[in-house]
Image (cartoon, rainbow over all chains, first blue to last red; front, side):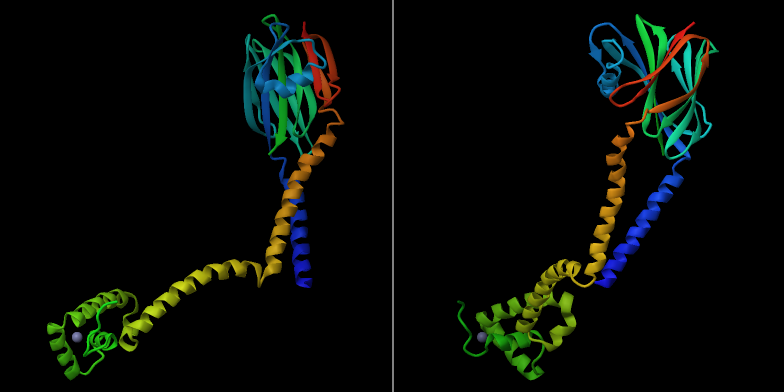
Length: 151
Length: 159
Ligand SMILES: [Zn+2]
């Protein structure tokens, strides 16, 4: 019986150490998903792929329609540039500048016709997302939902 | 039941088929078989059986009579059946502690995995992101978060 408990103890310690190394290893790359959304006050419509986010956004915005224009999933290393082409000659550049298990530091830039129109530095909680919005588009606005998850 | 031969019994014919009799007796029996349909059919039957057994147990065939051999084959089949139950039984017997330990280990691993998912929602109490800086050709910028999941939103108006 003592042997049995010993084995359990050793395995427990191994698992415990593994859970730490797992956190230490995380931080090499980050899965970055960008969703480009068109929000407007047009006909009631919520894209099924946006149901989670739209519900959240509807608590602060008065838009009735949320359409997913584009989705891009990228695996980015630290300081690797992720570019997403947007409508109206716009583009979004996302760079994870620092990655650790808890947070991801992102540099996010928005360009229009090659000129930078907006830039921000954020510290995103791992496995969560941020929404940036503002550019006018087709009787509504463009929203960019950026989520990050360490690999 | 078949009619039995009045001169030779089945066992003797079996020994004849297996070449276990003296050459003299073998010769007598082979002559008898020519005239006795009962012994002839027994010989045919034993020849057929020995052909089957020869393939797997040719060596034993020289020493053991076919009745016993048949029994051995049946026992072998039985043993293989028992083997399966033995394997199942083995899993729960000798190194039982190792097996339980491995099950416990799997449980711990899955717990640490689910722990992340179960504890995560508590993190939602804080904002999803902290905005360090905002810059650009904009007329106004608003930073706010949703009530429920504290989802961070940056809203800017292009100049
Ligand atoms: Zn006969």
